[in-house]
Each structure stands twice: as C-alpha cells, then as structure tokens.
Image 1 (spheres, rainbow, N blue to C red):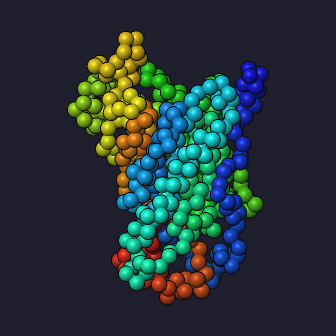
Image 2 (cartoon, one colour; image 1 turned 180 degrees about the horizontal axis):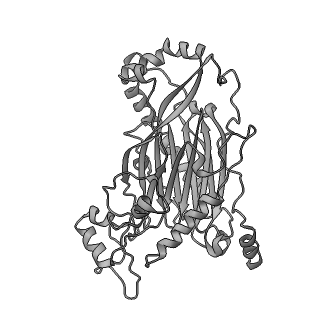
Image 3 (cartoon, helix red, strand yellow; image 1 turned 60 degrees about the vertical axis):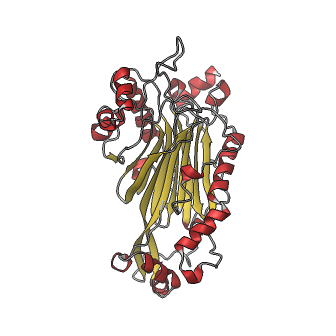
Length: 414
C-alpha cells in the first residue's frame, strides 16, 4: 500500500479512470444536417434551460430500499430539463476504498432510485397535462423521460447527470476528471469528481467535491488548499478540434457543489445559541465560505441567499443536532452546527431561483438543492429558424412567455 501512496504523491497521479457510466454514448459531434456551421446562412440564439442541482453527504450509509427522493428532486412541482446530483460518503471509509476502488453496487443503487423518481410515469403525465394546451393533452409527447448521460464515482464521491431524452442528441464531448486530496494529499477519501459536456454551443462543468473536515481554528486553510489543488489539477481533453476548455473556470457555466466542510468561526456555545434563535444573519456573518466568497479562494463566485438551518451535524434518523447537551454522551466529541453542504456558481448565464435544504434524515447531513435557469447558445440554419417560427412549438412557447418574440428565448430549467 505505502509504495503506491508514495508513487501517487510523487507523480501527482489522478485517482480514477476517465471512464464513466451512461445509458448510451453521447454524440461526440452532431451530424452536419442537424448542427449548422456558423455562416451567413445561420443564426445564433440563446435559450434558457431549467436545471435542478442537489448535494448530499449520506454518511457512508446505503440508501434504504423504500427511500423516496422525489421530494429532494421536487419532481411534483417543477419541470426541469437537467438534474445534477452530487453525493459524498456513499461508502464507508476503508483502506481499500481510499486507494480508489469503486463500489459500483452502491452507485447503481442510487442511480436506480433516481431513475425511478425522475421517470415516475404518473407524475410525468400530470406535468405534460400542465405544460401543454388542451388540444395536446392526450398526445404522447416523446422525449420527456430522463436518461443518465454521466455517472462517475471516486471512492465515496458520486456525481450523476440526467437529462430529458430529447436533449441527448445535442450533448457532446462528455468527460470526467477525478482529483484526490485526501491522505498524503492524493487519496480519494477527499477531493473532487468533475464532469463536463457541451449542450448545443455552451459548455457546462460540474464539480462535486468533499473537502477537508475539521472545526478547529485554521482548518479552513486545509479546505482552501484542497480547492486550489482541484482548480490547478483538474483538466479535460481539448477535443478533436482542440477548441474545448481544459480547465474548470474556462467553461461557460460552472457549478461547484458538495460537502465543502466550511464552518462558522464562532465559539460552539454561541453557534448553538444563534441556531436556537434561528439568527441566520449573525451566523452567516461568520461563515467561512462566505468570507472566501468575498475575498478569498472563491472570490468572484456566487451563492444564493441562505434561509434554511445549518445542514450539519445531526444525529441520524432524528432532527436533533449532534452534541446537544441533553443528548450527548460522555466523552463524545461536540461538533457545532454548520452549513457544510453548499452549491455555488461562477460566471454569467446562470440565475438561481431556489436554494433550500431537504429533510431526508437517515444521514448526519441534510441534503441541499437549488434550481437554476441556464442560458444555452443554439445555432440554427435560416431554414430551421423559419420552420421553428411556423411550428406549433413556437405557438405553445409564445402562449407561455410574453417576451419570447422580443428576446428570442424560451424557458428551460436545471
């Protein structure tokens, strides 16, 4: 074991292969008839997709068979085109795990639960009835089911991306990059799994991370060092035309999510008192990640308004924070509550509409979820564009969005 650790450290070797799991291979290049080249006979426009992003440290516990994650995905209230879910600690820490081996059975179980929730036929039918006009209610709208385009696990970190099947032909160049930042600065018990793809003409990069833990003064520097390593060491292939972004921040739309482990820089007793009073403002003024966002490792990044209770650390299967005086055991470590689980973004073209936590409680963390609209560049030939304006789809969109004609945009969700 140790010779391998030393070799990995010296060579700065990335953990995990570049392989990933998907329902089917995405197109590396869309045929020219479907994807026009930029020319005097083409038009570049912007659409907006709606996306749902979630992150959850599940505490090394396999999901129960009866776990219902439809509430976390909010499938009954929103109609999103893309779902991105990041998990941490999907397997318990062990010597074999930190060396980078993958327990595919656990990731398969999570993906099975996600597939079942997203493709709930009854809810899909209800959403179709809401979204479409009376004349179309009884039609079987194709392409509304969800497919997994990327699923990648490194030790306990899992990221999985699901899109409506009608978008699959327009997703190209999916790729993954795994960075271990754990023991000796290279093992996969901490680190990141990053995925990227191009949707139409816009590149997306999602970083699912589990940063260094610890609530002592100065531990935030370890987390900052992890972030620096992730940004510097993560890289993707340039593609056949050598025009694809290699580094995380080179992409058009960037999301960083996970158990970032940043704490609140106050004495534990003060933190617990403010949590009891639900004084989020005073707590957030001392939140380590907020400090980094203002003038630190994440300067220039954005985070939505936090209006929910800290997500860590709970007693599993309860609503009680770990270490509360009336629940604590003799000799038990006390961990002050904190917003360890976060979703932040970088750059333009992303707008957050919801930022909240879920209440699934079998882990010591609560999950966090966010809904965004993302601008996507689309290249049309003049013939395609004219056909679109004469189509029923344009009639349907203009009946739902008054500003489509003047802005040339439609509405999608992530």
